[in-house]
Length: 470
Image (cartoon, rainbow, N blue to C red):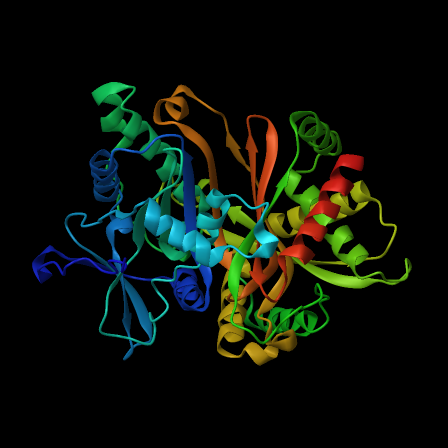
């Protein structure tokens, strides 16, 4: 079935237009190449009521107007804008069982016998790029938000929400999901619905909310930092590239620990006054170095990007569920050799990150990192083997905390995964971590065939071993 790419145009008088900010502009450039397609995939034990689900999505879009917008590119000014109609026009795209089977048949290969249908549909969705022509076709407006339902065998189904990252970061997407589940379950009545559908204004770009003075940097310092980022990137080590020529797509490998293992590593983090992001990054660095079979005393320099949800530190402070893209990034480099102790490297990694954050690098260097990301998109040859890899790993400062509830039981929610594509510019491994019912559950996204599933399963398996044995 063909995708319903854009809603019917609203009369000009009903439209509001908001120009994309600098960080949003960078994401608008990144998504056509394959990085920044955010997907929330829900596995349900029973078919959902499509009309109820669509009505709930319309309500959520109308109360969060940026989510009902369309993206427009203006070639004359090389700028992007969000075109916001007065009402939601989203239509859920249904795939019956025969259509789903056909999609799965196309995706399945001999090495995917252990990968679930739910997992494959998630990968299918993060590679559906509705925005691939944005930036080259100035006369078309493309929806920010798409929704699909896939029917599986045994009455199961998958609901997939696919959103342009520039208008909806991980925090906003998960807030949207939580509200959607409560609306669809209808468990708490009209008062709760009014609270869930509290009207959110269309926010400005993150740059407009940086507290006064926090982003200040002398011109000469900015120049030095830009040169430093550029020169350092030439020295970063990478995982082995298996195929740097073929067309890329995103694939996902899971990293999961049981509750006892999760409690042990979280207690270790608490004892050492570090966050989980430092430990995950350190395990990834050690696993990457180990995968190369190098001499134990041979050092390699790796880059880590840590993503920070800035809503609570902006001016004015934004609510946790405020829609839009309000993350910033800090890039740190680390020298790693064989035999490095996990906790020592985790402490070093986290301390490096927190020192940079305390020095406001997530604000002062925001423009520099945006510029370098766009530079790599425009000139892939500046990256090793034209791979578009800008770091080894990306992690979030804080994990998502999720606890099963009666709402989940009411709608038959068996599993969900939230992540985003990385097969354009980005890291070799993007870790989307969740603590679900006390157990660590990470979706690790990577570009294929630059890296293969077998290669990444081995790497993530080694990461798990390192974490479990610590």
